[in-house]
Length: 240
Image (tube, rainbow, N blue to C red; front, top):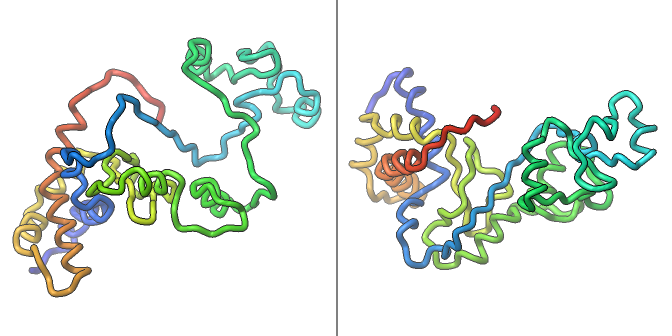
């Protein structure tokens, strides 16, 4: 089959995405899937350089003010959480959650001899390993390994991104990465992918067979993903 450059570029996002979640939707209906208890853990990973000391402010700490005389935030400019800690005034909605008992703050979290490399530090945090250890699994991925022995795929863990982070990778189980359900669905309707999915079910080479089956499962399930993403619409506005 010969395709032109335009078609290849337009449909390449589906090919990249499909490798991340083979056959995952069928696990939603499996009896051995992780039992849901009505609660959802949502993790917001701030990959940028968040200033923790100006987010949760130690308003009674003289060292904070003497070391940051130009950028420190005064007590009367922040929202008090306790007698000694305040939250940045731009986070007033978090303050409301805290007052309602729906938000907790874990402050001064770290590890001995912190690594100064941004990328290595991300690996340490996401793997929850010691700074002198090098592991290929993340703390959430290892949870999936333990809690989802009999699941066909750990569909209970989803990362809203183009690529799967280390935190979500286990030894045997991984989460799924998906950023735009509509884009996935639109791309899955391309005749190229439908033909590949229909014509190639088994292959003599194990890796090729796996890739074709992965593509087929993605094409077949993309419509379901798109419909489920619209099941509970919201009128809330979120910062980008």
